Image (cartoon, rainbow, N blue to C red):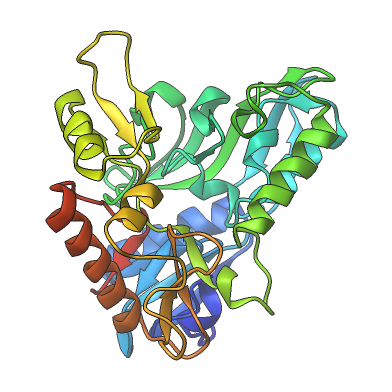
Length: 336
């Protein structure tokens, strides 16, 4: 056991200090640690890459369980088995190097592999649900260590039934990829397909331009990535928002083929039109919107969790007041 502040355990670099921290370097150790703490009635927080957490300031009455089991193996020619603590981008790099397509659009996403099914990570038209076949879970309710099919997670946009519940801990996962030379159609390239290596480099370049690839020297990357999910609203509400703004070309993505199908809107677009530009609220503020990408809330070096939360609530309130649309935070809030 060792002490460690959440300022060093999360990509936002805010948060207090857990009562204790336990590092788990194997799936079995992870399951046993969680089982022991649960049996003791000890509050715990499972921490992977820390890229999807906003943790309260000050002393915290919980044990941080650090997921550090790493490893990638080929089950067969196109199936990957991945330990939960493996950095996600290492998984993408491995797949591309082995001529396996399906996750190249998810290059550069921070955090650990074990977090990807929990929030059904996605980017540029691709989601982990497209390739996930099964997940090894430690079920905290039954105490069983078991493989479950992806369908059991009820995966949908940035959601699984593991998210916000803590009912189970991801130990390993398997992905079914495709032996191919060409990438999936890439949304940011107009649906074009390129080589896997070109696709990965293109996605990484796009993410870097938005401050979405971790860089210790760049405070625009001291974030939890996209802080809000893109809201899905009734078609009539989307029409109302578009008319209110009065701009042509509002980003809108119908979630079905019917004329009245729900529509996914761009959270970044809404934030900007509600009066929150990049870099808001300006120089000197400890927490600001990224200067590169409106959807990221960033720590400029001295922010506390309270600063991040205050900014998030200001943005939420502004979008709701302007458009009547609720923005839902993507990260998990702990103790806030």
